[in-house]
Image (cartoon, rainbow, N blue to C red; front, top):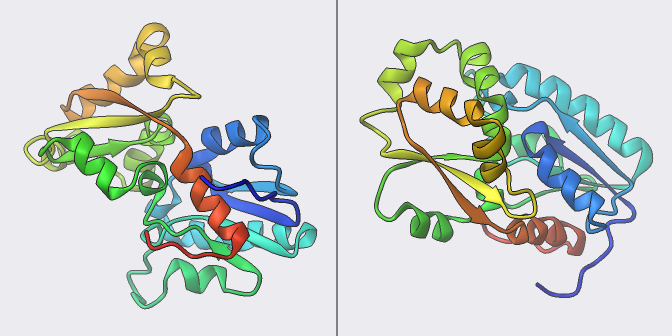
Length: 218
């Protein structure tokens, strides 16, 4: 990665699914933005609420900074009534840069890396935020029960892989101290869950591209 550019003069609006990763980048001194604001996690499954919360947090971000970085992917919003409406139509382009990725999984691990990690299997990809909030996403927002899970997961996916940023090391921590976090999800999906260590380099690079004004192709 090239020399880091400071985030001063920028505010960040992000999905709460990535709160752990972005908080780490703040605490480590990398993400020295004026302000970091979050919407609720998993709102891709509740698009009306996503639109409401995103508009509110963007307004708050603009109160403190002239430039806003939006940490949402191109596939994180779908209006079933107006498919032409996209996440970019919600955030606008005046002083706003959205990270060049499809979603939070792609922000942590690009397609080439995922292909290597998958080793030919069809994988259900997870991030720490997905593991923490899966009940809210699947059960509360999507309304799935165990029958829906049984219909959608086993037989289609070979296993689930948790992308585990090594500054956080959550897979090993949960396996040792809170195994129920992983076991409950595994039981519900009927998929084995494995951890794969990753770095936060891709997320850092996407954030830096917004500061430099360079739009990478996701």
